[in-house]
Length: 273
Image: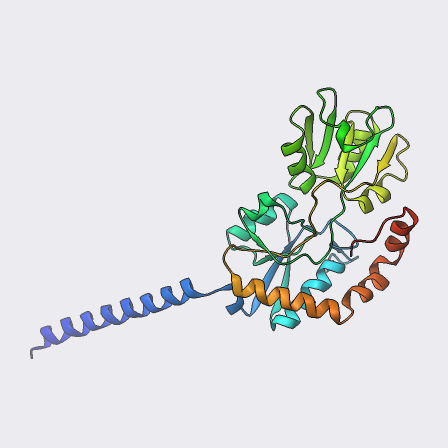
């Protein structure tokens, strides 16, 4: 064999080996699931204390943060918390920029069209903050052309309003405080959000009254994940069950939620976590 033919054969062999290696790596990547990862990136909107927030140094803290870390222990994974705006959580999950959502997110039919959820790990209460100068008192009073309903963008309150209040005007806000101030000033008639936040945030707002009846058809909070990862879903459901049985919820109530539980009970409400 002359030198030229030998060089050609070597070159072809190298091309073949590179192609095989690329194919194997590609197939491995395509077959990789979230459960195969050593680190799981968990998306949260860190603006919902005491569940998702930051400490004085800007580090993630709260009930959901500790729940994520506990899940990591059960699954044998390192957990990285990534702070995102609420509206960006599901898109980030779909584009694989995060692996899970643990951000007090309610399970809804609309969300189930694009992502999967674990079983509920907490019930989800939704309530109304209402402008005192209006004649609105309940959800049944909202579907009128003279009513403006404030909601937080991307929440179950917004979804419910869009689907159930065709005659009302809907105003979406990115911050809870802005929606409540709009109601307090009479620009909006009511604001749909969770009762804990409404109780706390409306204390110094003199023109707001509360209706703490739950939103009709409300489901609880779940861990969000990409569609079709059945093994991950089963592993998380098993971990959540074990975490609850081991007394994690009681520890969190004592550490973060003691005052909130008392506040709920003072309003005759059963605490949801």
